[in-house]
Length: 263
Ligand code: PEP
Image 1 (cartoon, rainbow, N blue to C red):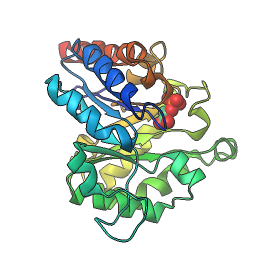
Image 2 (image 1 turned 90 degrees about the vertical axis):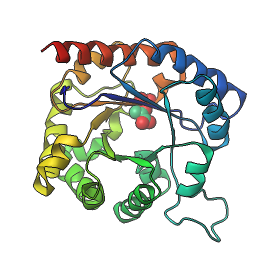
Image 3 (image 1 turned 135 degrees about the horizontal axis):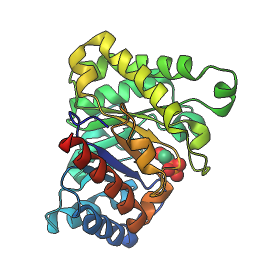
Image 4 (image 1 turned 120 degrees about the vertical axis):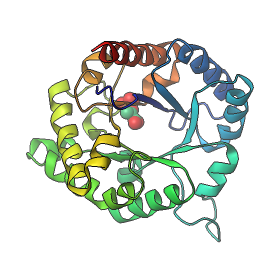
């Protein structure tokens, strides 16, 4: 963690809590987040719960922010079943997860499509959380840095247009939803490479871009990961569905940020 960048903890609810349960989970996160002054918190419910969750956040005067999990790159048109960036803005979201490995693997999203989505999100004033990460096969073949570099380069120019507006999430696919978490030093190696790529575009981009780690982050392993120099937060799946567990991750970030502030 670097004191120059405010830590960000984002919860990806995936295809869970899409109705009334989204409101109670959102309120649970609001309460948990009240303990921390130094951490940005984002919750990403399914589309169907965005407006309701936005209402709860607004009513509770919370600093917790709202994000979506995907969007179409076009602003409007004949795309049955799709949701656009302006629609997400209208529903109260200010963030959007793009290029999640489940979108890449299950729905065949390409680097090129993800870059178009990121550009569209930024145009609509939505902060993109741009996800990258290698599969187990790629890691075992020693291709982790090569794969993550290719995925990152595909959208880097878009992030470079507004340094600090978007964030990058490094999520090794083999660690997502598996309970297998990357070792902090392995995560740091990839994060440092991503920051180096940002620096090749501009020092401003490297200094301002928050790079989150994602993949089986929980209350009891968050501190080791968040303590790495280039880890600026976490994208949390399973553990974000329990407000108390998610709160523990926020607490870890708060403790580390406070310690970093003290020097
Ligand atoms: C995710 O889906 O972004 C994720 C990190 O999931 P989990 O925390 O469950 O591994």
